[in-house]
Length: 216
Image (cartoon, rainbow, N blue to C red; front, side, top):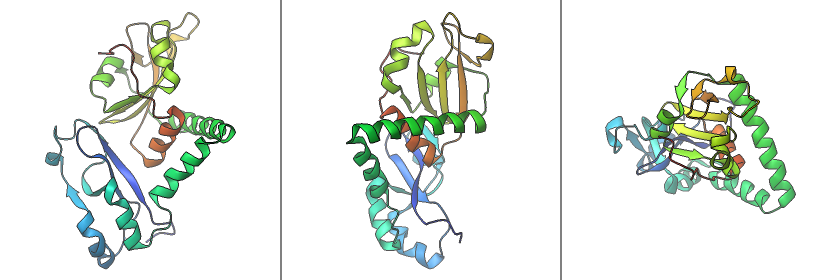
């Protein structure tokens, strides 16, 4: 056991059937696990519609569905519940000032995490799009600015979560680009799936899905 507070966190996102799947953030005793085992299932690659081609994160292992999270938390006496974390965001979003501050803070965290800890492999936007499980477009910035070389996207793929900054406007430094696009390229940072990163992305983007022109 660690000194970290016990909680359930999302381990992956399945675009086809299960949505978010959850797991414990640390090991518990065999006796404790036996109490909650009925709400868990040991997932394997073959349990998903297309293997895990449409899954972002780590699907293999003992996972529970979102509908069963509260039952597991109650049995294990978990106080830092998923509902509390979700309600904290909902309450902040009801106050325009708190909402703006939370979105700004989330953006600063995301920039730091992606830019300092992420990798920058060469990639093609169309390839990311065709293999995506979902794409968030904050304030429709990419939809509106795609052809002009502006806007941002957060793309979930089986190999990680990408932060894409369109970088092909007239005055852009295109030498920074590592992601190919039809209009001059973009900067892309990749991180492996993480519960905190996922929550920050969903706050910053307000879960606004990309609805612009087809990218592949």
